[in-house]
Image 1 (tube, rainbow, N blue to C red):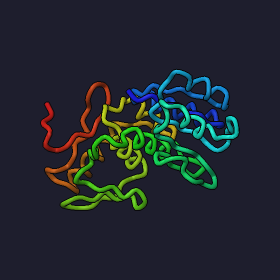
Image 2: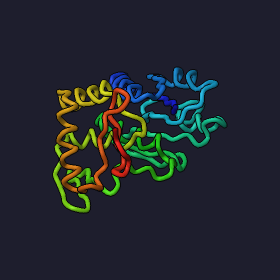
Image 3: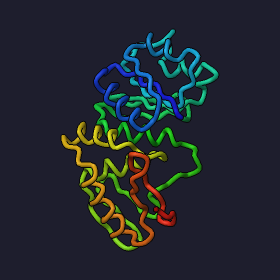
Length: 219
């Protein structure tokens, strides 16, 4: 299971992200100061670090720069929140503009956690245009609501079932409501409309939902 360190000066964002990611089954450690982040990293291997440029440096380095000096974190995946962006502190660093939207940060985190896992693409052959909110496939195109986009993008970024509680938490934080089953009913219809019998399936499994390729039998 991929462990994560969330080191953000904004405690509210840190806690909201912790709830969403922990709900997907990932161990999460939260720190809101540089000192607590450094203490948390002692003797622990993190697969993903989410931080921002508001935290003070560690011995003249950013927190991420300091972490990458530790052997167990030399190639850790990292997301850095920054108003101005910045130069990557390694090939596995990605910058996100601030102010950040929770669903955007969550999608980036799930993508980073699955980096290098062999090209996992549960949406194939469907394509998702996140700017135009358009779902397209071999037999058609359909527009998505913003809420449908958020849910589909989340499912596409994780391999284990996303628990209903985590999905409801994401919906409540971003759209003010949590009717998960209704949204997935509409999404299933749109996936079939654009891809026919090649459409990936949104399947209830293990108390949550997961995307499965069309060729997999579901009982």
